Image (cartoon, rainbow, N blue to C red; front, top):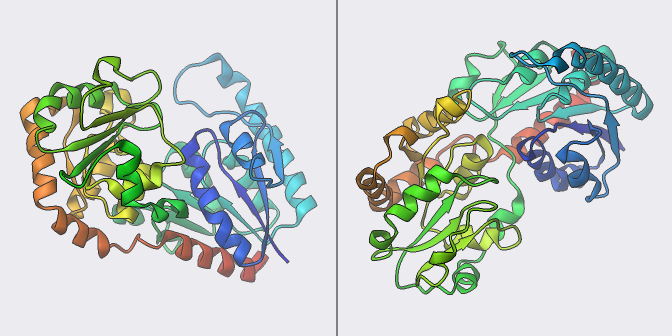
Length: 360
């Protein structure tokens, strides 16, 4: 049986694409193992799926002063030794990395052990962890056409991001029923990310009376961000977080307002949901969401509205524009080369596993 080690962690975005690959990898006959950090979010997510989990020492390489900068390099070195020992013990044919700092020692150890490693970069520009891994990778999968030209020649593959297959199995009727909605008005869905977005929440609630004349609204507002004064408003349903019913809510939504995290917008692309993207500002991030959103706007997938420029009027205008031109957005998304990520990545994994150490 072929063996694969998956790695990646630190945030849910470094784990859920790996989880999305699991059914296909199992169908293709892979015995699957996971290397992650000792106490990261990935450990529980993977152990709950009964995938053998191997924790290693890990540290974060920061570009700012922190006392941990003096100790974390030693943790990374220990992580490299840990990963090398595990790789030799398991004897995988291939390694797939979704990124995060725990993946750096694993990818470096893979090269040392002559095991091909494929890495995946979600954002337009590679983060520090993936930049450290570029020279050790067999192939580098990415989500944006603009990313390809900035990666080592011959290594980059425009793949898109693996999407959980259950998201494609939603029922519009079940979604409407869950919210107590009807078919009388279109549905607008607001997603602020796993923690919600105060800026988006407030912007939507500022114009809620106007929106409700035309829309039924599903608002995923994040933990601690419910507004109890709106609980009885007809046509408006707010939730901190939805998991089980999320596919049904996506199926019910005609258009979406969302942040522009790479995994979130790749889900919108795969589900062909026209969207108003309000990326996290450069003041609060390294600017990757802005670049992601600009690429999606350029490709005709979404409407970009920068957070600093949001007003009541231009938010209403953006929503109306996306809805009125929804068929154009859907058509553009249907033609995307990044629409079949699981097959593209699984084929690369098969190719690497077949070539083995000869590709180093």
